[in-house]
Amino acid sequence: MPGTKKKVFVKTFGCQMNVYDSERMAETLAPYGYAETTTLEEADVVILNTCHIREKAAEKVYSDLGRIRQVKDRRQVLGKDTLVTVAGCVAQAEGKEITRRAPVVDLVVGPQSYHNLPDLLFRAKSESRQVVETTFPEEDKFDKLPARIGPRAATAFLTVQEGCDNFCTFCVVPYTRGVEFSRPVASLIDEAKRLVDGGVRELTLLGQNVNAYHGEGPDGNAWSLAKLIDSLAEIEGIERLRYTTSHPNDMTDDLMAVHANQMKLMPYLHLPFQAGSDRILAAMNRKHTADDYRRVIERLRSARPDIALSTDVIVGFPGETDDEFEATLEMTREMKFAQAFSFKYSPRPGTPAAKMDDQVSEEVKSERLQRLQSLLAQFQTSFNTNCVGRKMLVLFDRQGKAPGALVGRSPYLQPVHVEGDLSLLGSIKSVEISSASTNVLHGVISL
Ligand code: SAH
Ligand code: SF4
Ligand code: F3S
Image (tube, rainbow, N blue to C red; front, side, top):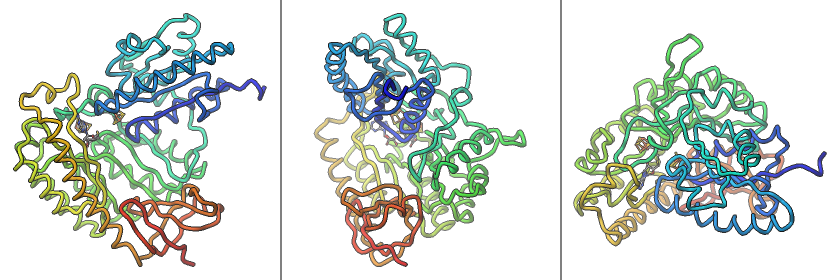
């Protein structure tokens, strides 16, 4: 009965993989009559899909739970139940601690168990107790999830690889996502086809270490990411492919060749360098030097001269001196990143770097971050400004705020704002760029 439809509210923190997981969690509940809502007050099930990467991200969850408790209380007065779920990487890292700190929570479920969400919610409700499920099950959640429901936009994420065996000393991901695992090619082709049938034109392949992909191919052999990209590119309707996030040590020759030869692969790569000093890189257990990174970029640029780069950088890793920070600035100047994400080092419980002596003071970290970010912004602005006057192919994937405004993405992932008819959503058009700022481009659709 339409009037009795139940509602699920999902809030996503963290990386693109969490965005993907959130969609799939909502899909597990759809067969039970749950529709998604963006209004917390009307939600019968609330899911916070959380991120543990830095302290700030993790702490946000608890402030949200405070607000959710008030909503749950108000709904209870009206005779309505609310089941509160904490999913994602904080769930995996903190488990029972969450139920202790936040009695409002009914279910804690880790990233490898959310295919069981309906059962777990049923258990929490029928037994009226807090349920915690953070084991790493043997089964592959992707085999158990319901088939994908139609996508909502012309672009979609597709998780192809999950987990990480690299154990960078600052990072929680190997603990929250578990060991590296690659999905079989056949299941990815199948999911990609469903997405395309639903109108997707651009796929971003996701993995914590996506270029280490080695899933089983239809021939029984392990396929590389390069091979996977080429075979996804053959699906009619897929116009653009991207992948993220990569590790410099896994930029193999065949991946370079795909950048040179596969025109559906966009000329853009997110490749974190983290720090410019070899001593810091070694302490981070990155297993590459600054020059190794430079050589990777050189090879990439000779394979695909128009490639634009994005990166992640950490400032204030334990023991980082002024000179070592200068090496990070130097790398930034050399590489001229089109985009970048930069962070103050945040000590994470259970990681080796959190126990290192000589933690850098908050004040120094803030000062370094500010200097780095103003440099990064200069390069980002000049990359964007250089696009003015050029024609770029833009995939329109959402409406803008103003009436008649459309927003799309350039090949370099820049948001491009134009005036245009809604019927253009999902199509790729040539746009002449008329102005640029640090974060967006504006342009006119050229006929
Ligand atoms: N898998 C990706 C990174 C995932 S986390 C990779 O290997 O590059 C995204 C980014 O968050 C990292 O690249 C790093 O720059 C940053 N990060 C991770 N742990 C952090 C910490 N403890 N403090 C600050 N930044 C961190
Ligand atoms: Fe974390 Fe390093 Fe793995 Fe990236 S490669 S997810 S930074 S441990
Ligand atoms: Fe955060 Fe987990 Fe992604 S810690 S960055 S949500 S893998």
